[in-house]
Length: 342
Ligand code: PHE
Image (cartoon, rainbow, N blue to C red):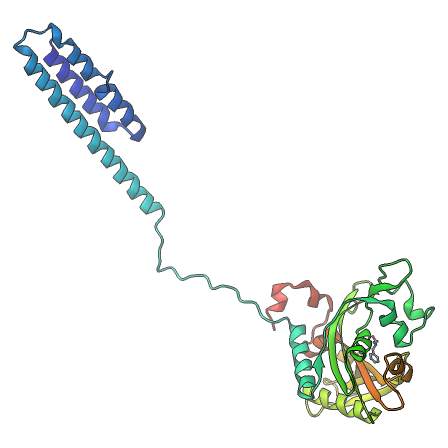
């Protein structure tokens, strides 16, 4: 076969290989035909055996074939990359006309909404909000609140103690805030101290080992039980409406004397008795009383000059009444289906 025919055959073979070549095969073809050890170079090497007149003709022909192949390979490469780009654009297409998904925006927990309402009422009466530690000394949680060692309220079965000597604990009430406030403030004192408290209670519909209390306290010259009644009555009317009725019952707390418990008349049955108030007609709201002279004295406040009242109320119970929540556990589970309702 003469070199002309060889070149023509090589060209048509290369062209048909190119037609179906993918990106990776393209480079292999380039090397195979145009490379230093490629087929065209091989043909050029054979030219030595040709008559002198033939050489330039074959040489030119070989160069033409090389140029054509180079061009075709380039074209095929461009074709392939255009196709790849088109496929990518189609695959990654974003339809900007599809409506977006709205971000979920959280909101205040129902119990903290109630706390905010209570805070607002007391701030309006000139009270200062105090927040402090949940890990307490037994001295503040009990002793200085007139709960001596050996008192049943200090039992290991009710309290989370940290130390063998029962000197450090998770506070069981917000009342130690009374002592902290007396230590850091000079009378007249008016504080509201909300926060978490802890007791060894089994979880059920009305109990939790962690719950919230709001402590309130006022100390000044000439404060009497009438101030306590008047203040709490005003607070209840602001929170539950002008027509709401309160009831003060005698009670006992070691750190107040006299002590009382305050109930609010059931808003559902107006005292007649119904399932909401468990047929009582009244719903228990808080414990309160006049601060015991011993407690004032232990904080360096002269009980002959100053007097004061204090109260402690359960926040969960208030929120449950306010929003008609039937199970305490719902407040802590943070199930959005529940929380979304408020
Ligand atoms: N600390 C008391 C309790 O947990 C409530 C209370 C507070 C009573 C302040 C009187 C004065 O039951």
